[in-house]
Length: 336
Image 1 (cartoon, rainbow, N blue to C red):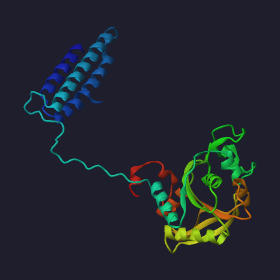
Image 2: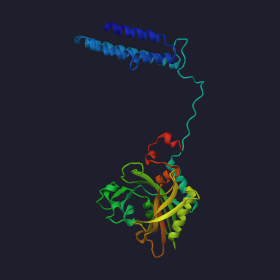
Image 3: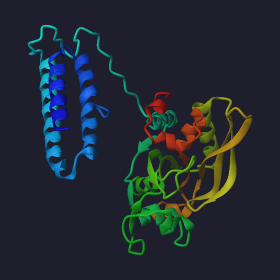
Image 4: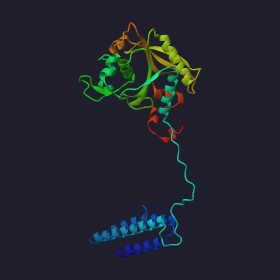
């Protein structure tokens, strides 16, 4: 067996000396250094070696492996740099071949949708505002007229960053309505704004739910604002975003921060016939919210609406699984 190791090293050195280009070098690597190469087979010989000779065999086999690997690396370096003495030696890369053009990047479908939404509402006179993703409980719940016993404030349904039983604890915001509160605290009416951003809720991931998603919120505060103004705004939005034939309806609902409240439905055809799909909530701003920010509810009225951006994109582009929007699979992203 010891002699077979010497024979293997000699054969490898002779074959390596005959290598003249990258293709032949790769064949050498497969033959001797590959997962099914001669060196792998050599190590299997140890089972036939007497016990008192295994140590010596192992040392010699390891030295042989290192010797062949070093000779291969040296030969590879020479071929790549063009310093080989062989007249047939060629560079491993042919620089005269045309290169591959770089692939152009593009905006993510969520970013595209946000840009489209802001452009639509911008034409309708809405300014854009932003706010922090880390919020205190006052702006996330209290100022929005969400009572302490409301299920939305359950610690199990939120990402709290500090003790939820402490004074005004911090959490990852569960809605972008917090931006409305901050804007009203610092701005005198009239106000016409939209805000977009990420929100966080510990939902189990499935085709329609994710623990982080995006919202767009709208707020309009002025004198004599009515439910008719709200419906007109949402109707104009739907026609601008989905097309002039889009049908819209408001279904009565309940939200602590609006009164009356409604859910926005649009009629769309996904290949199985027209059907009504809920895309967000809306309503007239509750007087308690105005009082929390120092507005006189007898003087000012307003409406607010909130739409899920992922849901809008999925409805518009017929995407059936929200998880695809966050997996970063280029095969999916290239479609938009």
